[in-house]
Length: 465
Image (cartoon, rainbow, N blue to C red):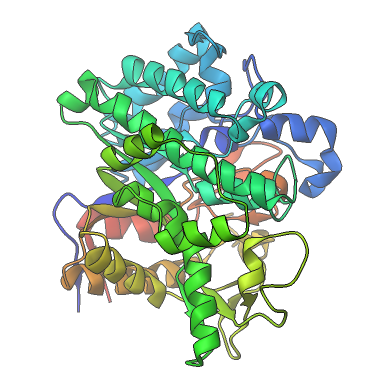
């Protein structure tokens, strides 16, 4: 049976400036540019962000391919380190203004809605070295300066904006688990960074609502990677572990963004362990008074936990994961290349949670996808990658999403990660996610079987059996 999606449903994909553009004509380095300069050995095959998928030079032909796939929307980001010449004053780089204007105009000419994100892990490294990055409220203020310039320059055409992409990854990667620069392990700093990212989002939303872009119908939100937490069993200790994991991994950003407040249980826990962030009543009021208009949800895999083997009250460095241990479900379906469990039903659970616990705010799947290494294994004689596994993955997730929409979930779109195989942080090009393959040596791009399949879905706004 065919499954029709709502009218004007967004069909497209997501990428980001630092993962697609390359460093061409950039005047400043972001944290990943710098990290690669210092430690190229940290990156798979020592491939950094210098070229990425060459979007800076090939955006016109890249967007033409996306038009060919019947995209009606595309999310990317504006790089702070490309747009701004002087971070203190907010003076802009003329070439960057030209580039982003041409990209936006090209998208609109192709009937592809431009959806823009402001921060995709890529803070200018100068602001880390000078102020401590997101540890500093000075950087929060400078982010508002950057965002204001974006709204002034591009808000006449871009009507959907997002403040951060996956801010919890900045916290976990940079301050807890050492998979992003600056690779620290510091629970106190981690919680301050989390607070400052929430504050930065709210302050940018406040500024947005004062400007013409909002008055002319613009919307602003945040992109969160929601990983539903499932307990290993019905045992009270496992249930409690899952509850506490949910507070840190999902509700730390979801509650302030939509409800305007941090979970009181979380605040009490942080106070008890003396790792609570520094805040003021004025800042908390700004967070409370400036909720998001729309929500983006990135979903890749579930989060399964069990009661910790070691008591959470043990002495030593405080980290959030002292309250739970990871749990591997026997018999789970895996993407072995990426090491992630495949569990499409979680999309339904996310949708029901947003509907029932967060006021049924308008939202969309802003990323979903699977990264596979060595995709040339699946290339046919015509040079097309026959990625039937990706088609099955998308179809399974869309089935659950459609079920949730039919039961009242207020979801208005689905974006795959990613349109074209892109550079992916320290993982570089090890795993490929795109509907379009990219030969990184020649920059020749070819539509995969999944791209042709996705085109049919987008064209007809329905999922066929």
